Image (cartoon, rainbow, N blue to C red):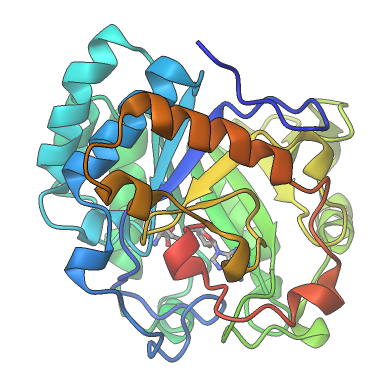
Length: 333
Ligand code: SAM
């Protein structure tokens, strides 16, 4: 077994895969106009190709955790069958299988997904107000998503993680509502800093730092930090007498690149060493997978060698704003 270690001695045992660049929502911070160019079906990795890659990452490259994301991963046809295929392999090669979803297509699938090995779930939910939810996502689906959260909790996904991208003037006045919403539940509310991506209309005015969010909460509640490692991805807190936990993902104001353990595969099968790798530096796994006769050993070498190119940290916002065609739908967050 090879360990994927980069020049900075970071071990990469967490893989995030975007299953599709298509999404049924039009979130303001991600895909506001819905007119990003879409891949043809032949351009996304097939389930057979994905299964092969997952097998290689887990059994040859030490991957311990895989997150399926998108676009909307549950919008991909036959997703339950894909889980069923993975579950056979997972029984003999344990790894943690996670999904990030907008929760609109989850209700009728969640039990089967759990049955086939889904371990953890993150549900994106940016407003608890019906009209505002529709304004942010383009769809009047708040009730559906709330039912999905209830169901996930009742099925024992503990905690259910709720991802909230906070934007000034859009939903920043709901921070305390989210704390109240979760307080008696096995939920982890994750306030995520708004990050700039192509076409998502990021501006400094709409950005709120984690420190500011934390201050808003601290005025009402006493936050007790759960971990003290400086480089953790999420800064996790507990509030006395609350069952829920609160986390902040401060990718912009206080990055955590020093502890990065993630690799990403985009929906078009590109290996991305960082969320903000420019597209011309992405590594073409799809081409390799589709070259006749390529062995697993060659794929292992390709992935392992690529780690040498990983930078220590992502550039600052000024540079991120210049990145072209870097969109979350293809990368998956
Ligand atoms: N469709 C799924 C969903 O909505 O959760 C998965 C894909 S979505 C791109 C994955 C995560 O990225 C979501 O939690 C979303 O909130 C987050 N995200 C997307 N754009 C973002 C941005 N500009 N800044 C911060 N987080 C973002």
